[in-house]
Length: 229
Picture 1 (cartoon, rainbow, N blue to C red):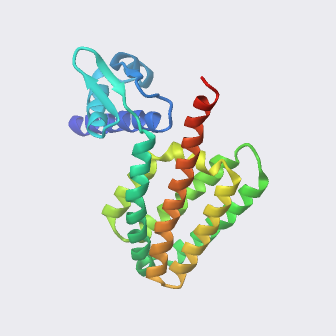
Picture 2: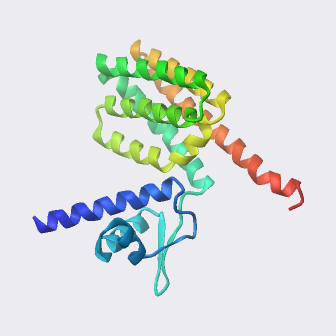
Picture 3: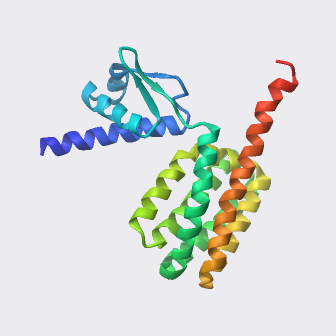
């Protein structure tokens, strides 16, 4: 029982630290001190140390001997790579979903599309976070509908890795509107059991999101150069 509780504690610390890295709370090159984190989370240094090792295996942290653990984070190239891989897997996932999706899941997808349009029109401060959350839930239901535990696990992890980038994407109304329209088309293809069309639409949907993010990063990186700074 003690071993199980220790494992569970390490898992909780790992999840919290990973969430902080992926949401930008911990920035690239930040040092992650075992003592400080342990005090913040109310745990000993052992589960923190184990969590940092696990984060190093995921490529989010670098442990430098005699110096400490430092955040590597997710670079724009990492995000682009993930979107390229996701585009293929999301297409396959959506194809499988056309064969296994339930009426309840279809109803939930329809509700998500409706709520997404509602929040987009409200134009409130929480709009981006609401639309981003609904976008994530739309994809999560398709992962579940694929009837593949492995597919669900892999794509869920990818989705978490680009969480901050996705939130940035839906902040712009134009992309958010197009994304919701693409969700509608994907949903319709799934409802009609058009597996080929559903796969192509899902593949294109992810690539469109990636292209939009690439344009934003390029503009942000070019701006300082153009100003002479």
